[in-house]
Image (cartoon, rainbow, N blue to C red; front, side):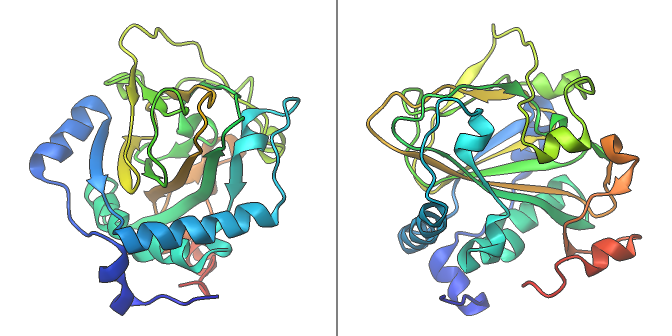
Length: 267
């Protein structure tokens, strides 16, 4: 499998930091459309590595399963060297420090694919609803591997919806149900909901409290997203007796030895 390094990053990724205006917009609206972060070469390679791993699982759409089981391939950074490089050293890391703080860990990497024919709706939810983390500063970073629109199942969000705070889904989520990939759903007033179409290689960043959903893919095109989530290095799982959320320490320090040791061999 191909290896990547700091020398190859400039050929694959587009680095830039958030402007003061973008940071303010994130805090006010709960999200920021951040533009393209992959070069043409980087996008082509990431698609290739992502599809190799997706096809390795022989994933086919199953109408009887939830959108989670149809659409997600978790811990993709352990399977793709390029995605691991992007996760741990790519453009999102500096941005995450700007929004989360100096001490940072990666807490989720997954493919979120709705290939043509996958008509499953992903209902309204918060990413922090699928795993409540404290402090409440975790962010989700989405990279589109295809052009996405309403027909192909792009994300919908509610600008400012993060101001609702943590919506209680404790009746739906346990450690066991999370491991079983049981679907979480919240009721939302959709009056102000907007779709977020994206071009291939573009990115979207939003707060862990941002309500979002996606419709089924009714197009003849694939909708492939890379989902990365970052949190404070000391973030704990509220739903799991406040145990530290395991994730690779990417920047700064942590008070938890288990976080320091977690995936320390991966780079």
